[in-house]
Length: 96
Image 1 (tube, helix red, strand yellow):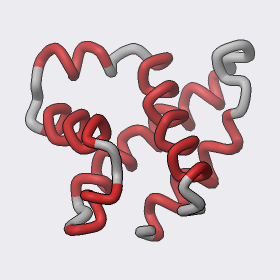
Image 2 (cartoon, one colour; image 1 turned 180 degrees about the vertical axis):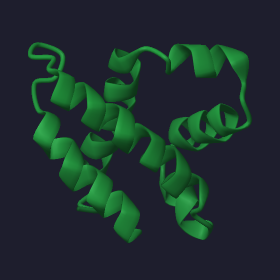
Image 3 (cartoon, helix red, strand yellow; image 1 turned 120 degrees about the horizontal axis):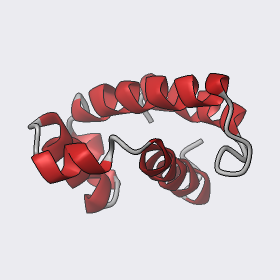
């Protein structure tokens, strides 16, 4: 797994229970690692195919400026949930 994705997953662990305990610090962290994820995941080559198409499509269309997807991810909770899904996928598949 790319080092940037490992780093994102590690930093995501600092935001546990975000939906129930939102803080400015956690909000800033989620926003930061969301943008890092969009950049890092987009840079993957063949490894990208090891992940569910939902991640591939969300990153592709978000980075292309797809209006409905950009609007969806303006919501911090949607950003958190997407990162949470990615983190869980990596844990389940033992990528981290």
